Image (cartoon, rainbow, N blue to C red; front, side, top):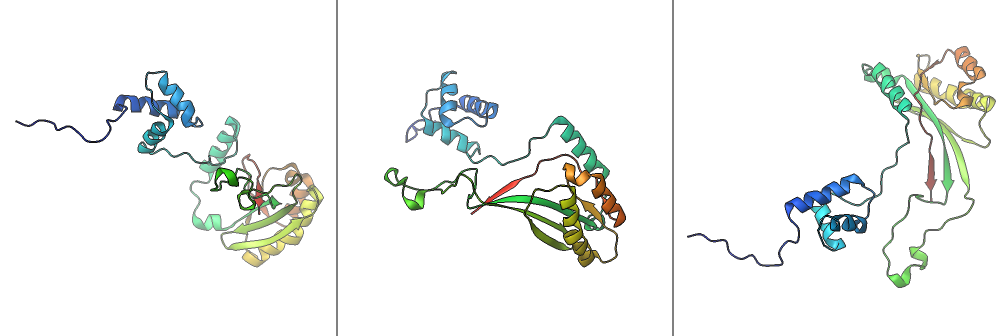
Length: 229
């Protein structure tokens, strides 16, 4: 005769069915805390502590981490981006090597990661120098413009004023044109920039046509800011 021996240790507090209920609660709102999910679980008759909730989620492969950032896109943005990708899905590596990508970015100096900083400290140390994240009300910042291609990086410059059509033309004339000549010589290229109003001005289009530079159409999207220490 074979009988099932009594197991050692504390019995598991939840069944497989109850674990599936917790998974559904988690997927319903991924931003919920373990305490919020615990209360939801209690509504279906499961009475456990926060630690048990964390343990069960960990068993399922869930980890509580910072959400990755991604631009908020409207349905129109999504359709435009999909169409843009379909039109270029047959491009080869050589085709993409001809593209010169460009953009500018504002860099905040001394602010660090604005999404939050985690430190290890005891409750009595929360205001210790090593445990603080220093902030300033009006941080210094720099606006940087640059370009690059599959052949390497081009010129980069600090922009000391707001960018209008004439300022943008000056940037292209002083930094884009030399970058193209350095990377491609007399070969044809495709120039990429975004859809900001100063870049789509008639004077900018005329400048690019005069220099025989082909522009790439670009779907809508958001710019960005980098905060650096």
